[in-house]
Image 1 (spheres, rainbow, N blue to C red):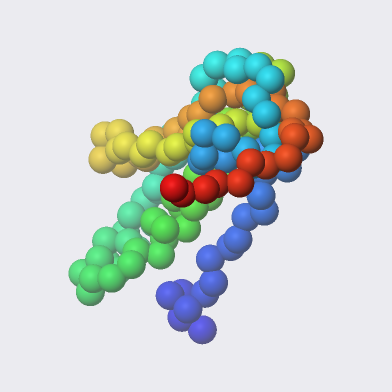
Image 2: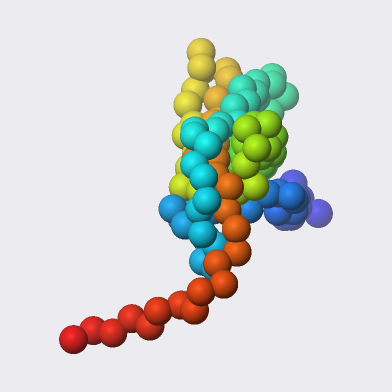
Length: 132
């Protein structure tokens, strides 16, 4: 089996924390906003990956080594975001986004950031939407 045919590893959802890219969680009410939270990681691509990726880039297409690296790094950034939010007392993080940048041409910085909040289940019935 060629390296390009190998499946990328899948990562489990982050346990013990509700993390959403939306500014709300359906069925929950924000009780308290604790503030900004983040998870940051800087990772070197490594000489081996750079050489392999450089050779693969000659033919074009996806560079699987970098795709896998960024998938791992984003997951680690989310884990760090969760840990930081927990240290603030949060049980959820809303409006989560990622930012990625390159440092010195050999390292990649990934930050996951959002708003740490305390939410509780909202028992009130949802209001129907009517267009008039």
